[in-house]
Image (cartoon, rainbow, N blue to C red):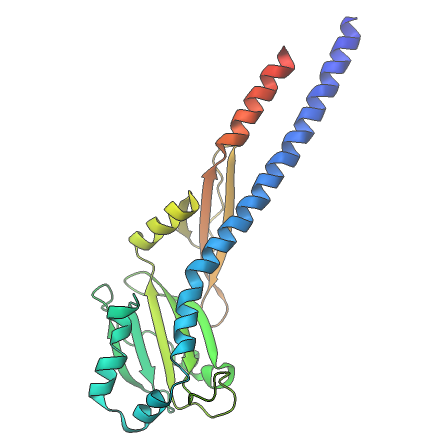
Length: 238
């Protein structure tokens, strides 16, 4: 009877172990999906903003004559009205003609010229860049008339670059939204998951040249799975 019991116990243990793997894998997949959705919601507004304001007749007109008062009223408003931390406008010769930022960013001229050059072909470009202040999310586009929402029917009249500073406060907001601990890591850093009940997710953030720049690591303690495992062990021993 003892041998039969031990064999049955071993079978139940193997079944429980396999079941736990399936359940944890499911929670991991759910976590991956959740974090991807949160990141998309976080990144989309800046992309939408640069798109909305780069097919605009007034912008094209004022690119041609560079009315400083118009730029101050309409372009500087990105900082005050749209929670953007950095704005730079380039002419068709890829020269910066207007640059402004929030109080959080003191750096100037940090967008590589090649990043602006590629807008002549690609029309849109989204990436991250490292500055002395820290990580900045960039969305950029070529400037066109109001009848060219696709940005392909006319030649660019210039280029608009918008930036959002990923300061500690922004990372705290993402941490609250995702119920996770977040860390910005070097690409070469090892991914260290502490604890067998921790779900993790990593997102590579690329630079203007599409080369990996940094890695965004998310960690969340899976207390529900930990509770399930402890209960299942207790039930097995009864």
